[in-house]
Length: 260
Image (cartoon, one colour):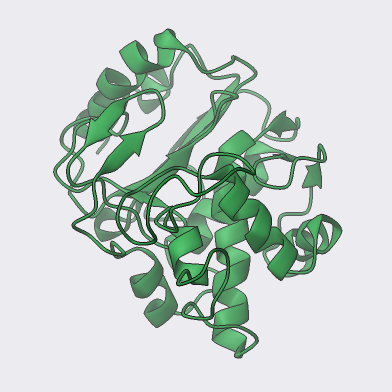
């Protein structure tokens, strides 16, 4: 089957990457900017990884509530609630998806303007700008989202050692909720990306447990299997809703099963 036929109707632009730098399939305008929404967190996390690699920060350094570290914030295990509120849980006791935690990470990186500049100069995401939202407000092209996927596949600024650490589950036993897809026990998360584990949620079935990625409220998606050098990226202007909960699991399963 033509791999292009597998790319979803919900996306404005999307591509399948497999093994080589040129996309296996792509549709839609690769140079038009779309909101990345929470897929932005994959770029923010990559910048943290680069700083750790350079010795400019450490995953274990204290950040957030007492007892929390940069790693806790990256993996949504700091106990912070979704927004700038009181703690939702004890540090390290539960996975609570927290945009506020990523706002603190952006502050640690030097602020939003520095993050945007470093996305361009360090990660090579040349189109990226911000809508002013620290935790999930990057706006950019499909071409740059492909570049970000290649980075997480090991073809960029992050060393193999840093990638292994960031794509391994942090506090793997923790349970928690995947926004829109319900609660999971455990709910594995790395230092930035969500990890599939044994759960069939938006990542569907067929993908191995080591699969990782992120989705965003704008209908954006980045999904990666390092073992196969395989990734799917998509951008959209369709607001996340019940359609995604219905569509994505079957779509991601089908793409993985039918792409050579």
